[in-house]
Image (cartoon, rainbow, N blue to C red; front, top):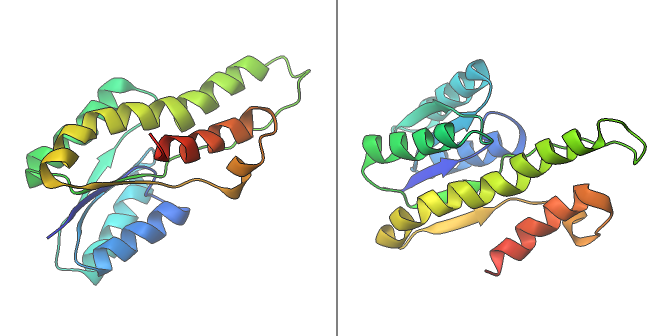
Length: 161
């Protein structure tokens, strides 16, 4: 029985992949920032699988909440087999936007720094289980234009590390 923890699994692609893992018999950890969405996805997973789907609300830009995500996963299941880095935001602005650096910092903290941090916490457990890391990105990462595409390129580059 696989244990899969997914960041950004409360909607969109993250929800779809969480449902797929659940349908294949994996226990899943549903996480995001919106508790109602997390609950809804976890309930869908429970309807299609007899395995567990636990709910963990986490803002991945907050280290204590990322630590809590990994700790709850290990406390519940005792192991981790698959980490899916899916969480991300897309904020756009022009170079003359007075909030450009705030938008940049928020975007990079969510889409780059959090991937490194959650992965660094998960690696010891993934090594024990001979597990896998899946990084969800975008084709926009292949076309570097300003900072939005850097964050997508990072996920492709991170794969090769």
